[in-house]
Length: 123
Image (cartoon, rainbow, N blue to C red; front, side, top):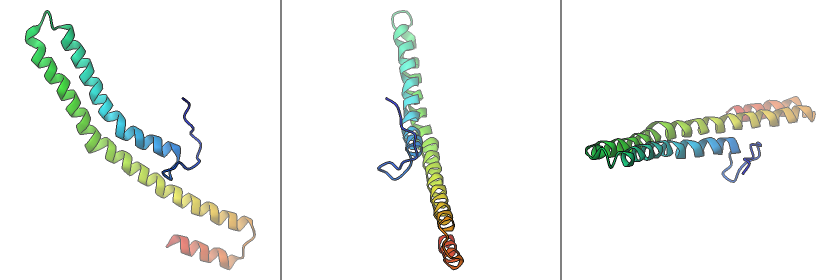
């Protein structure tokens, strides 16, 4: 399935790239923790017949990988993704305002009107 990376607004009001970044920030870190869990569980099952005394150790590694993935996701990566999305949204508003003022200039609006627009948008 191809992802549309055009700059058309999504239903949430952000661009698809911002939505994609926000989605990845909230879903991939736990998935990384689960990947560590699965790898550790596979290693545990491989050694189940020959190294029965290692089952507890390997299971603890699997659960630790899950815990670390969830901890990183919820304390570092997701908040960072939210902060980046907020910055991008603020920057988009600034650029939209600048674009509208440039459209006014291009359409030949009077200088007094332009000054008022700039003052109102700067406040």
